[in-house]
Length: 171
Ligand code: HEM
Image 1 (cartoon, rainbow, N blue to C red):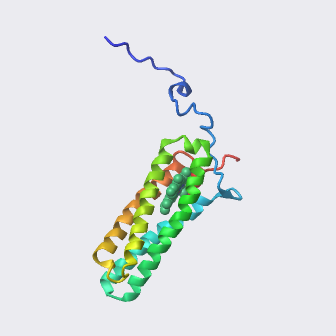
Image 2 (image 1 turned 90 degrees about the vertical axis):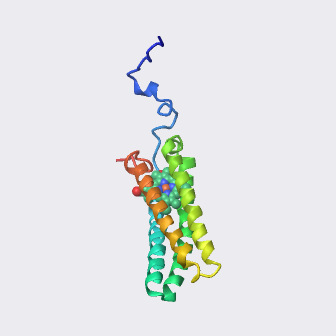
Image 3 (image 1 turned 30 degrees about the horizontal axis):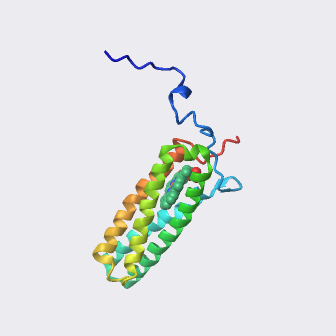
């Protein structure tokens, strides 16, 4: 008969991650006057990803070239602002011990890098001819980007609201 596992009532001793030095240090270090740059910058790629899909759908519906041109600009700016958001997020991940040590932060990193790859593909593909690119692959890429940005953004919110990462503890 195998010995039953001995349960220790002290949670700090049971969880090797929790006992890492700096586990409780989760305050943002990439911030302006205490406001985290990552949280402020993520709104732009999120909104522009939705705008690209909207512009593609309007091009499909109306056939108006304006929407194909709007889509290429919004796909490009979604990617470039995504890089800015990604840079601030990566700095937080590497500089803050309590963020670096949590697996959930790395999951968010992997999701975000996937998102940036999809956003880059969506923009780069349109460089071959922004009007012809919309149907069908442009709009399919935009729809996929929307799904990935929803998952990435939701997961980022989880880091803040569930794990309290990047928040201030001064008050
Ligand atoms: C590429 C590397 C990225 C890393 C390492 C990263 C890391 C983080 C971290 C550590 C947080 C917790 C808050 C903080 O410390 O500032 C966070 C929050 C968040 N992230 Fe990222 N992130 C990355 C990219 C992105 C991208 C590209 C998006 C979406 C376009 C995104 C969306 C979010 C959202 C929506 C939050 C919640 C912000 C809030 O509610 O205040 N992240 N991220």
